[in-house]
Image (cartoon, rainbow, N blue to C red; front, side, top):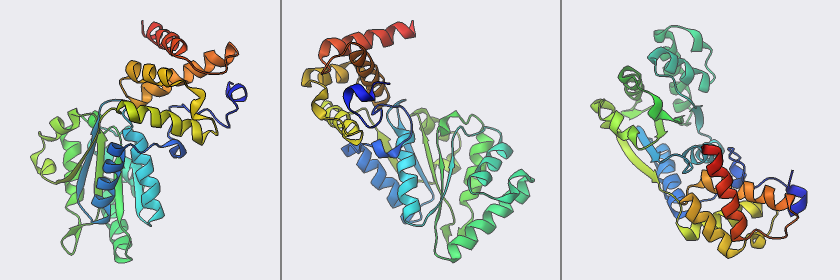
Length: 269
């Protein structure tokens, strides 16, 4: 709606998973490198944790893109089920297995056959589970542990990456056999002020917009209001662009950011 006014090729602050807009802060880069290492080196289990809105899903999708480019077989599960059999079926579907609607033994056998087939041909497989902290059944976590028991020449056939809120670590403490398999832990904190500025500039640049579209003081206001959480940065910047276009403005100033933030607060009431 506002793209024409600001001369943008796309909306730069959508809260979707378009990896073109991925901004790699130092912390995001480190997390990505840690997880790539875990997969390439055939580690069993890795964790990606961070508060809501810090970009865990975004990073998982970017990780999936990079791994596919390297020939890794990627299965991605969002909104995982807590019932063990339902979770196994989600995993089987993520890898495109025909046994997805079968019994537990059929699914596990199908997964093992799939994993061995690709490992014997030099390809690795990784299972990415987003929002893994919503799993509230220890038996479901136990099924993941059992999948890690599938090995080839003493190494796991499957690498699993679990992403979730910090409570994920607490939940895994109830399943010591799984927690002990964690080889890599990656964390995503909120952005620092300098990275909020770079984040906004990057996303504007992808949409062919000028970084100067937001006044420096406006970026400072965005950071203060959002606390450096990317999802909230997107909300306030998107609304500021909408209101600014409606009023025919040429630049986003701090006062407009404050008004956008107040509208956001009003919507939460």
